Image (tube, rainbow, N blue to C red; front, side, top):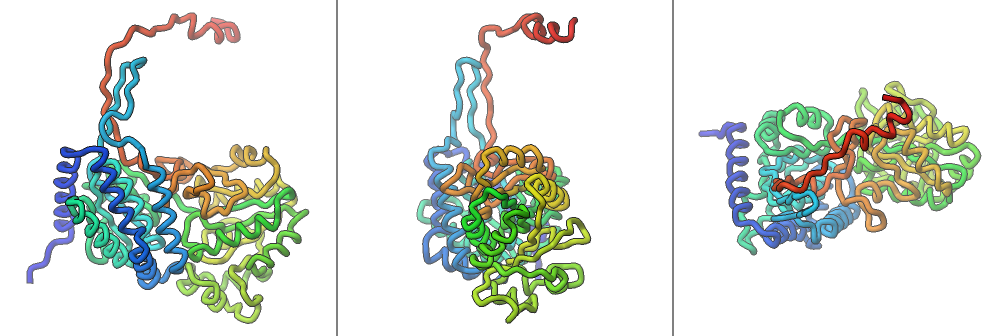
Length: 467
């Protein structure tokens, strides 16, 4: 029996994508790009298909829960469509007589997108919509567990494409369970790489020789200070921590509480689904097995998590997440890192300055550049955090998971991929969005000269330092 060489198969897929993209661009228009993006968006948002994708994702990955994945598929896609509505991605996008420069939108070409098992429907859909909006083709490389969901998503997208006569080869995926070799080849021969998930894949993307947009690791730390609305903070942390069983990189992993309100906050936390465990070792001995997170605890419903941690009968009925008191930070203290579960590390700080210090230590250990949160009524303290912490985002008085990746109540772009800047080893410090999928050609015309004198540039310097 003849078998297709996997590398040759990847090269053939990208070649078809390149042909389709060239035709898409050649016959392009803003309407054509917008319609293709709308087709991909409706493929995941149509309620019956959304539910099927959510159910399939949970069934095949064992991560998250169906109701929250339905919400995520819907809101992330709807928010993205709001963000790109009216965005000019074809033809002249800027014409400035003052500089004599006219900018013309151009696609990147073929996008290679590596997507995680934590969001096997929403993340590829987000990348696909952005790519099509800007006139690109895209080839998705899902994680092995995410393959069935990605296959179903592409079937739905292609069904929508068929209604409009759009070439199916604009949106493809690496078939089968995938391999490092096939993903590596995709990284090497695409025109732009987008990587979300494994930091190993991120490193490979940056060394592939292809321009790459990749994101860092999450390990969100949130401060609750003495001015905070404690009940509101506790409820927002609960809603955020438990959403889709903490699969999001924006899920809180640690909360640092100022000492003067620590006991009051714990009481509020207990009243909002949290159960406090003081015996750190009891949790860490079950949450990690042979140095790795316990798969029976990762991204599981509360009941399964509690069973996996051996806490059944020892926490109140209706417990939604576990908060563990701890002081340690660093490699020898696993609770200070990302836990991908309904487990939260709880730290006590002497005062706000001490809370900032602890938060900085946690971020430098893991999650630098991603985001931190603050529950406070003091309008100056977000600025303090912004200067003190190596972070790209300071989320103020919001449920972190819902706010970081874009919300209808803040101005962040809707995205499932958050750049972490140089702190996180990334080329971007913003939420990945449509503008990253487009480049421009500049027409440069001559304008009247605008040359200053040396005195105009250096007069203020000379007055201070002398010539």
